[in-house]
Amino acid sequence: MKTFQELDLIDPLRSALADQSYETPTPIQAQTIPAALEGRDVLGCAQTGTGKTAAFALPILNRLGKAKRRATANCPQALILAPTRELAIQIGESFATYGKHLKLRHALVYGGVNQVNQVRSLDRGAHILVATPGRLLDLMNQGYIDLCELEVFVLDEADRMLDMGFLPDLKKIIAALPKKRQSLFFSATMPPKIIELSQRLLTDPVSVNVTPKSTSVERIQQQVLFVDRGEKQEILRQLLALDDVERAIVFTRTKRGANVVADKLLKSGITAVAIHGNKSQNARQRALESFRNQDVRVLVATDVAARGIDIDGITHVVNFDMPVEAESYVHRIGRTGRAGAAGIALSFCTNEEYEELLAIEKLIAMPLAGANERPPALTGAVGRPMGGGGLVRGNRSGGGSRRPGGGAPRQGSRPAGTGGQSGGRRPRRGGPSSGQRVRQPG
Image (tube, rainbow, N blue to C red; front, side, top):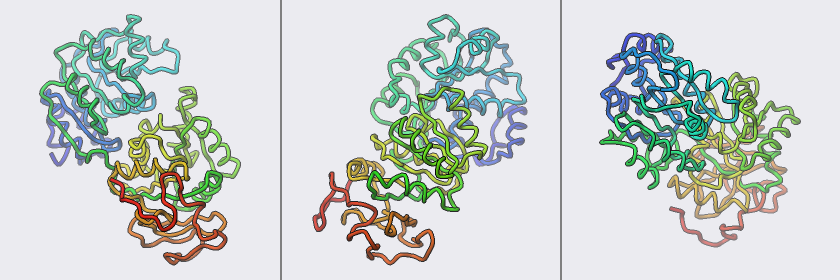
């Protein structure tokens, strides 16, 4: 399939795609939609930002639009399960966009808000239900949702759901599904537990894999900068002050850390807002909208939001703290480089975070380019920081590195005032001292 026009879609969907100027499908769409239109189960492996939502939304809308069945109160005909509130809301927006010319209703069910309006939508009747696992089970137990008429079930971001501890909820939901149904299962990675879950859910599925297993997006320029913990905030401020940083997401390890980083950026004159699990749903939505509308340039987030943010035009991702789980690195940097665009991901690494860096490099099967000095066996440096905490930028190839205000630094030169080391101390924990040999990770 090379164009959407080749698909046997009903006219209202063709009109909606034309309204959005959608002509060429992404690889996941090209491989998934024809099989889904035939009613086949699908096992899809692809990262976020590859167009998965349209890959399942269009077949569902086409199926329900053809049938023209009336919505029954509390009995959805299609269920899409998402790990986070943000992703559920964005999926709902996509259904509204693609189904704008159809007389189909969709409802959203997620936690963190009062259930009154959600129950009202269910009582009114919705053809399509987009839900998070916890609130879905809660409303099922209260008798507000009955899956007896369900025709299509979609499990999106399955590996993220397992990371968030939803496996017991998923098993209960799957057990309540009608045996006769179409199921579509999507995950960015396929570890053993995900494969086991897919085997429980799917029947003779069509397998679609458009992402190499556990790898990062190739078009994203990835760098690591070795720093002392106390330097992070100032280096971040310098980075975000650069002209080419148009829209950035900064990831921290903790909720409190996200608040602190955002507050300090605001005090330094950089517009920023924090988003994490302790924020109310309304506050999280306001933060996302202000970032999407470019009212603020920087979104500071924790990993819970790493895959719930689907916004084009993010030029930079900064790992203020290295992620504890190496898989989270792939999902974090996937917020940039979306829809075919280029992107830059920069990670701050302290001595204490060095083992996390090695785990990431093993996972992605490549060393990260260094923006300053690193252990000998992990070379790939593209520049060194200026004395006094300045920042050097560059790319993986080693060319084009330059200081924010001047020419390219000479490879191998020592910046003034560093005592022979660049960007803070060389990593100790897990890292070699000068002259030691290290094995290449992976």
